[in-house]
Amino acid sequence: MLLKMTDLSHQYSNQKHSTFSGINLNLEAGEIFCLLGPSGCGKSTLLQCLLGFEEIKTGRIEFKKQDLRGVPAEKRGIGLVFQDYALFPHMTVGKNICFGIHHLPSNEQQQRLSSLLKTVDLIGYENKFPHQLSGGEQQRVAIARAIAPSPALILFDEPFSNLDPALRKTLRFDLKKLLKDEGITGFFITHDQEEAFDLADRVALMSEGKIHQVSTPENLYHHPETEFVARFIGSEIFLKGKVSAESKDIETAMGKLSLAHSFTHHAEVKIYLPFQSLSLSQIAADHAVPANIVRRSFQGETYSYDLEVPSLELDIKNFRDSTAFSSNQMIYLKIDLEKLEKVF
Image 1 (cartoon, rainbow, N blue to C red):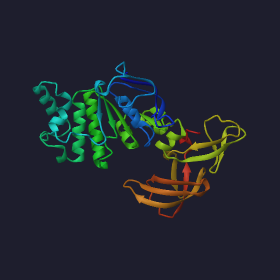
Image 2 (cartoon, rainbow, N blue to C red; image 1 turned 60 degrees about the horizontal axis):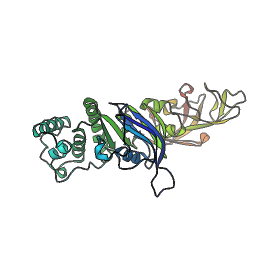
Image 3 (tube, rainbow, N blue to C red; image 1 turned 180 degrees about the vertical axis):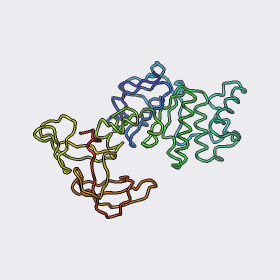
Image 4 (tube, rainbow, N blue to C red; image 1 turned 120 degrees about the vertical axis):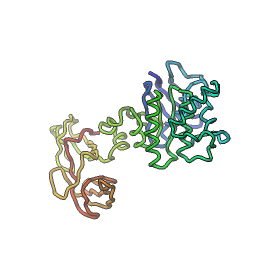
């Protein structure tokens, strides 16, 4: 295990409540790990604690089996790529990249520089200055600078947030390959679900200073453990119901649903409806309710719809379907019971 966080908590001196608490996370050597969550949930402060810029209140951080408490930031051997690149404006690209390996003989520095310039596709840029580069090029320099000393771990603080969407996707692919090729563990913090799912071997979802679930992107999406995970990662669509007297069926506005769960007698529940459990049709059927198409937009292979479902008191945004229905058309929203798994 490369990085181990045990029962971490943090609190700023001017705040009444903890920034985060009860954080238990482990990173294996060579994996790419993403801490995902909304702004203000505590993920940036956790990164600052890993770097040594903030002190934890309780708990223990171990890096390569060494307790990091009291170890200054410059002695931790952890790389960092900032959101705003943080390149040295008075240094050339070559000198920026070699900043962390200036202690090596000049010929070794040059070999490492040449290799990294090729890796990040910046051959011929070594004598340029940061202001002469595009945002994507500056980010590539920042990544090369972090990788140059071959750290075991690099932390990435929202590294693509200042780039346009197309460039973000390209850089994510290139960076993931680069980290895997170099055998470097990557720890990313982000509020972008697509970014986390694209990059990570595992994702931890954080909210209000707590970790809700740690798993693969696929498992987070298909098997959310809490209502927050389902809402943040998935469809945000829930169907209210009441368990019948037999404690087997649930009475809902879409009829009586029989699910493979055990329930408390007469309990009120919320059934999570993932997008893959729903479909649109012009034909009425069992477990279907009328829905009105408020907005339609063409997305290429699919259409995106905003729906009003009066009987469920739901407004569904950006529901995708391959069929071309018309705006303001009344259709039916159907549930596939076999794809319902979570009840809260």
